[in-house]
Image (cartoon, rainbow, N blue to C red):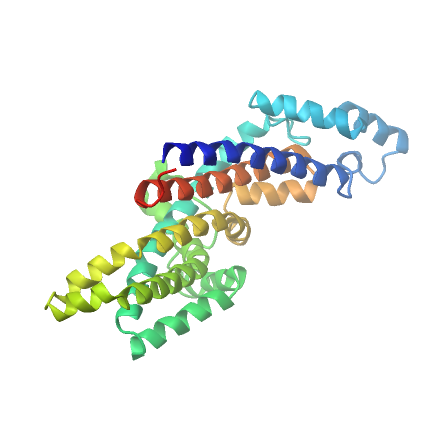
Length: 312
C-alpha cells in the first residue's frame, strides 16, 4: 500500500510540471497585448513598446518561461500587471468566498443526493424512482447561469427573501454569510446532486443484486440493516464521483461567482482574462490545476486505504 501511495505522489509531480508549462505556453501565444490595454487607444507604437519592455513582455519565450519557473519554485506567482500587487496576495484576498461556496455546495449536494439515490435504488421502478431520475435529468440539462438568474428573479427580486448578489465574510456573522450563499449554492449544486444521485443509484442497484443481499433478506435481516451494509459496499464509486465532483466545482465556481457577483477566485480570473493580466490568469489556473490533481491523488490514496485488494 505504501508503494502504491508513493507511486501516486511521484506521478503527480510531472503532471503539475506539464500543466504549468502548458498554461504558460497558451498564454504566451494567446492573442491580445496587455501593453496595448495599458497604453490606451491614443498610445503611440513607441509608448506601447516601452510598456512592453518595462513589463518584460518583449523577452523571448524561453527567457520568460525560465523566469516564471524560477519564481514558481520560490512560491512567487508573479505580480499583477494592472494592480502591481503580488498574485499570491490577490489570491489570498479572494480565496475565502470560493472556499465557502465550494464547501457549502459539495456538503449540500452530498446531503441531498446520497439519500435520493439510495431511496431511488431501494424503490427501483417505483414512482419515487422515476421522480428522482426526472429531477436528475433536469439537473443535468439546465445551465448553471440560467438557473442562477431564475433564482435571483424569484427569491431576491420577486419575493425579496435573499440578497441579490455579493458575499458577506463569515467573520460578520453566520446568518448574513449563509444568506449570501443560499442562491449560489442552489444553482451550483443541481448538477452535482444529479450526478451523485445517479451514481449512488447505479452502484447500489448493483450491490443489491448480489447473492449475499438476497441471503440476508431470506434470513430475515431488517431492511435498514441490509441497506446499510449494501451502501457501505457501494461506497467506493460514490466516493470517487464525489471527489470528481469537487474537482469539477472549479468550472462551476467561475460561472456562479460571475452571475452572483461574488468576489472570489472565479471572478478574479474572469476580470484578469478581460484585462489580459497574464500573471493572475497563470496563478489562478495553476492553483485550480493543483487542487484538481490533489483531489484525484486523494481519491487514489483512498483506494489504497479502504480497498484490501491494493497491497502493492
